[in-house]
Image (cartoon, rainbow, N blue to C red; front, side):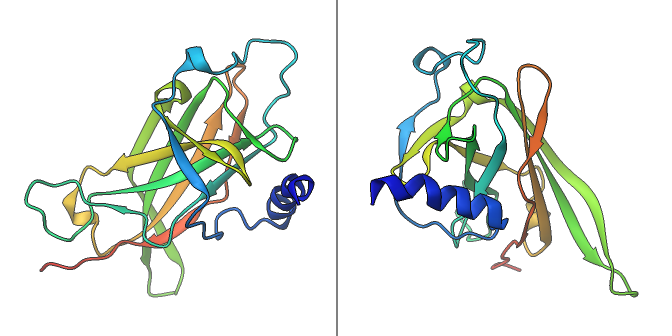
Length: 181
């Protein structure tokens, strides 16, 4: 069954299920990402990243406020960089994440408004390891406005390689819960 695992990841990526996949287990944290513990992207034998896969839990919300109310103040998810091997790898570079608010207009179309954005080096993002998906990253984002609760948002996650190439994961739309009034 082990030899089939890279095939499973490749099938998921090919099918375009990256943003809708629900993963609730099989990943564990490997600690703060440390560039000294990972191979350098400057090595010539490393294959370039071909795909970016972002995976969200069923409840990806972070409760980060001191007041302790139930409204979330952030979101977390995992990102895997595939170099074509069918397993996630760690690489130098950076993640760029944009969060848009989606509002339905009278004509039924959605209007997107940028409400937050983040940039972080891969070396500063906590690592994760999955038997099925390989090495990845655990991204945790705190949004700037408490008013994000109750809104529909769209997350766009990009990986920027040291050579400037940019790859984007499938976008993810979420309705942020609002529990308090």
